[in-house]
Length: 401
Image (cartoon, rainbow, N blue to C red; front, top):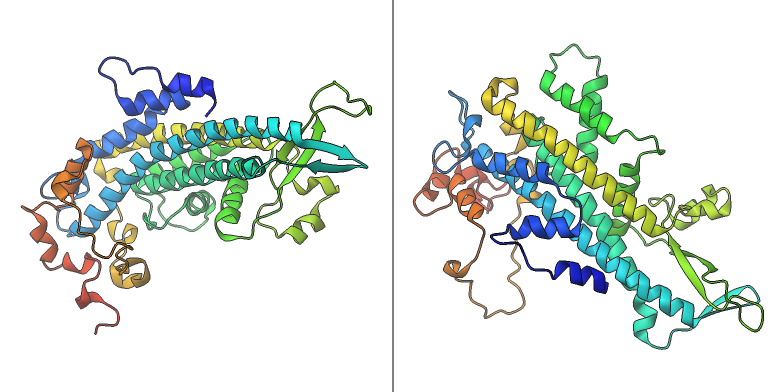
């Protein structure tokens, strides 16, 4: 990190602090709505029967296992959003520091002769500075995308959307809500869900061009699943001071992110008009800063609406019935996702950790109780209607041996 960032983060906490909140405030914009949403859901977890979110239990129906899974996963996603955003801001501070070092080294080690840029680093550290910068740029996009996917699962749980809460992502939720607004089928639409769909659309709408969320999703998919695109750097004059040969004495390079991240290199060049349009015109740091700001603002705005909806549904659960069996499919419907890993690590003689020495925040204990995982209540998972949801249960394997 830069010295000024280390200095800011090194200041002592206030008396009786909330370390998480204070740390987030020093890293970036505050997200009180996101924290409020998580707290509301946590408050509604029942530490005994009916388990999970208590007011989801409907008389005359038995969805205890699904309710536990959906409730815990919903809460887990809401508390993961701030975690992902902290990662974003840590990556951003490291990226700024790496960019400063890279700019200095590039200026000192670069010459231009006959129209050719010659960068001659003295050692591997100087050579790898560009890779360090790129690592943090990628980390920002991945963490932002993860935060949006956790927001998507939060939307599914809070508005009772009939989607698989565990496997959904932000693009799928947007598509579902868009279809909800445009569908002409004669079916009874839930007012709560359609109103939320309209509000989400207004939050995302922008006057600054096409869909930035789709671009970010495509860039994330390129990082994770595709061949890496060539990094393009524009070499520009860094100072008005001239060398004896009349050329600028120092140069700097400005990185630019790809215009069409899901296209292959050749495809991107074929559609680039002019050729320089193969990448975004603005510098990479400007793009990343914009993504951070837009995503954080969107998450905070949506979280505020979700908190309102949650409170309203708690007061009147009939506003939207929770489609638990659709939000958490039975194991036989997706056996591959429920495989039990046989990997035990590389230290073959290592003993399992001592559970009495595990440290977790106070909220974790309530999660375990609300999921009936404590010694006093976990026998419920061996009863009829519950055991089939336990991963690795041979009785429910699609190919029993």
